[in-house]
Image (cartoon, rainbow, N blue to C red):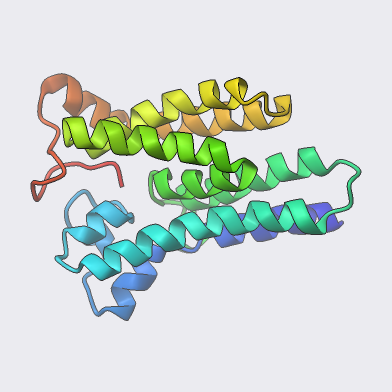
Length: 204
């Protein structure tokens, strides 16, 4: 029963959209009504309010980290790895398909990062470094997110993490890449907007 409660709470926590919450707190338009229509930090940034975007990014990452951290520290040792994996996937799926937003959520970059940092700090930092490096070179947020997602399972295996963790990372990476399918089409067509530009499609 406790295991099920952890998973349900993780999903509900993931369903909290900080893009929508921060937009309301800062009296900004709903991020689902402009730009890419995606409730994520990059789209909130289009509103011109950097603080709202920063807090959205931190909030979405924090909920991923918190859910996994709680599962790691408050569940008995028996079956802990499987519970942590279930909670990690639940909070991530909550962000992608939030019950509070009729199952239409963000693309999961920040939440995935929070989950990875909780699973293993070095894993999270390696993925973050990959995103930053690709973003600095290409100025393409979506490309950075996709390549970071591709690299995540490789880093997980290189760090010799438990097989359950590696499978969870693979699952999240595949979902994240799938959520960027429109961005991939734009990248192939040379139409993807760069980070410094306004408008167009972005990763979050």
